[in-house]
Length: 301
Image: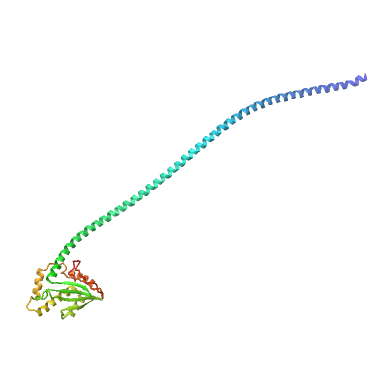
C-alpha cells in the first residue's frame, strides 16, 4: 500500500508532465503548421513575384529596345535640327552681310550723289567761267584786230618798231620827208629802278633832262613820243622845206586809228609791260618780237 501511495504522486506528476508536453506539442504543431502555411504562401508569393519579375524583365527588354529606337530617332532629329540650325545661322549671316552691303551701297550712293552735285556745281561754275572766257576771248579778238590794224597803220605811216635786246631799241621811219626810209633810233635800258639812254641815233641834245623826267614820272611812252618829236625837229632843221611838227602831228592824228592806249592810264600799264622787258639787267636775250598790250609783234628784227 505504501508502494502504491508512493507511486501515486509520481503518476500524477508524470500525467501532468504528459499533458504539458502534449499541449506544448500541439502548440509547436500549430506553429509548424502556421509556419508551413506561411512558407507555402510565401513560396506561392515568391513564385508569382518571380513570374511577375520575368514578365517585367520581358517588358523591360521591350522598353529598352523601344528606348534605343527612340534614342536613335532623337539623334537623327538632333542631327536634322543641327543642320537646320546651321543653315539658319548661315542664312542669318548672309542676310546680315547683305544688309551691311546694302548700307555700304547706300552710303556710296550718298557719297556719289554728293560728288555728283559737287561736280555739277563745278561744271556749272566752269561753264559760266568758260562762257565769260569765251566772251572775253571774243572781245580780245576784236581788240587784237583793232590793235593789229592800228599797229599796221603805225608801221606803215610812222615806220615804228621795237626790238628787245641789251635794252629796248625804238626805231622810227618816215621822219625825214626827203628820205622816208631813213631810220632814227634810241635804245633805253632799265636796271636798278633807273632808266638809262644807251644810244641815240642821230644824237640829240637835252636828252639828260628827258631821262631825268622819265625816271621821275616813269612815262616811257611819253618819253618815246617826245624823242620822236626831237627827231622830227632835227630832221626839220637839217632838211627844209618840210612839214612842221604840228602839221605832221595834225595829219597823223586825223588819219590814225583810234587806240585804247592813248590815255595816261594806258601809258602807265604799257610802261609796266616795257619795264618787265627792260628789267632784265645785264641779260642779252635773243632777238624777239616786242608785244604791245597782248597784240601781235610790231615787227620782227
